Image 1: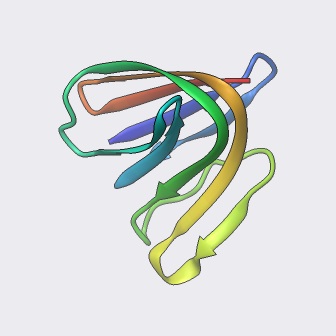
Image 2: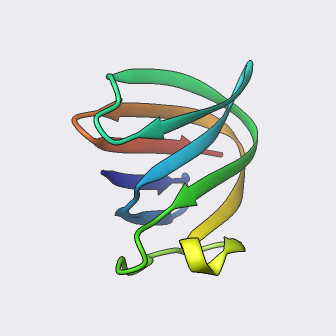
Length: 94
């Protein structure tokens, strides 16, 4: 599935991912392949991204590597909105 993270100033991330964990208003939630369509508000917190080892990362901004072996990394947002539809995840972040 494709994840794109946008801020008012730039594209923070765009690429293929296997899983995304987002900070929801009532706690964190995960998105996997073939997730049902969704629109949700996001709170301040960390976005965790898991990628295949063969994927190229297109990332701008502050990156925190979780596990190099699993290609997991996180970055912080100050809230926003997420839309999931047809294996595409769009995060509009502050």
